[in-house]
Image (cartoon, rainbow, N blue to C red):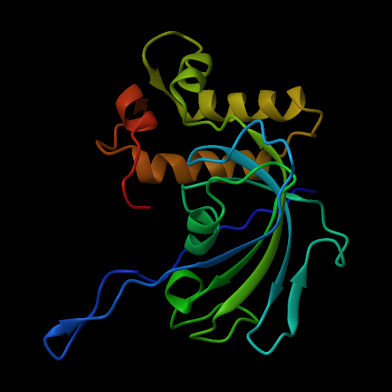
Length: 209
């Protein structure tokens, strides 16, 4: 069963202190392994398949997809399905590449924490990228998803596209995952709240995510 991480994060806005400003939080990225040949690099809007291990600052592991017998996780990069630190730290990555991400609290679970993650936790993740696929936000995908050629997308059309993409690559459909992804996309991109996505709304590239 595919694992969905729907985590929303603390703000990374600059904070004014004594008349000055603190620098914006950053992700410390270390490439641990990169394939000799890289045919494609990850970018915002791509769907990524990853295995990952998570650690606290003291080195204690709090999660491992392999050790806990979880399937590798699919998510779309750049639309906040995962920690903001992942959206930042997993850009420009090759299939087969492994990275170490050290993520400050502002780009992880912030002041509140979540579950077993205490507030203000700096987290380290070891992430292996297994596969990159065209995500559901490219112009080409928009045209393929627009089943009735009316130049706007309904939630049904978005979910049908996701289902077909999963089947195309040999993965079982996951209605909960598809519903969550479609709902997240509409929440962020349906700017006029008409229940449809225009081509401009859907393919618009954010400068800051």
